[in-house]
Length: 157
Image (tube, rainbow, N blue to C red; front, side):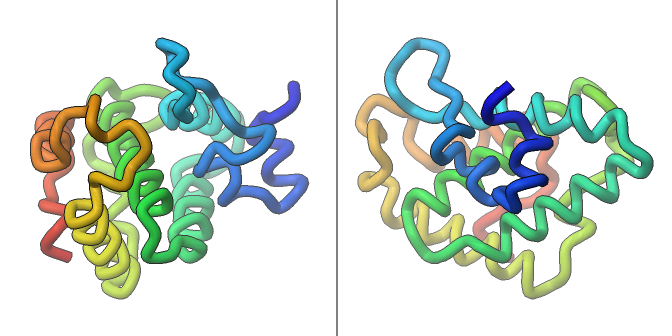
């Protein structure tokens, strides 16, 4: 199937996959024209589940994605949503994730700082996210992330 995670690996397009660019775009359920990160995250997890050391592969691919991000509203929004996908799936023990494994715990201090920089940038520029006027305010969305088990205030890294 076009746009699957194995295609992203084979074509060295992991970042495009996480961002939902090109063939990796998964439309938002209610046809609002936005990318739905949870669809891609679920597909990636299903692929990784069949591999040896799937959690380590997830960390590897997430780090690769994180290293490509810039101080840009779309990159920051993508990161925020992908982190949320991890915690939503971990809360339900989906695929191979358990509450004992925390993606952010696996990151270096510099990688965590980058998350903080991008999340603060997103907070300060949320009005530039396409469709933000129809969304919950970013502060409320960040609180929802905590509800789903993210133990961190992403703004403080």
